Image (cartoon, rainbow, N blue to C red; front, side, top):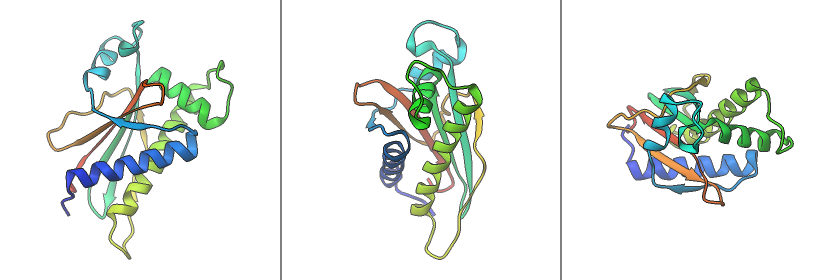
Length: 167
């Protein structure tokens, strides 16, 4: 199966906006990808400027009915805000690292499940791996689709990368 890149982008947008609306209680909107936003974070994780802070990524692989990789990448401080909203915590408290990692992995897992429903032929099942957490920047493979998002206050918060046999 080869999916149309615009169809993939539309499916990603639907999956992400639905997931963030229902789980994080936040509206997110697509914007143009900016790979340089995360590149400095990988080389200077303790830097003071927003574009140079540490990053957190969750990745997983859909293995059935075809191979598709997904990676959600956020700046760590944005991952804290998303986790706080998801868990219903206080804005001035930082959740434990394990909770942040679990929350970001669960968001990606939910996004992948919604996407898989669109890609899986009727009557077939899909299989996805467990999310793996890392500090990897978004991949830059030639055949990927990347969608970036920002919150209502125009803060750029994450990139979603999708690549694999279906594209």
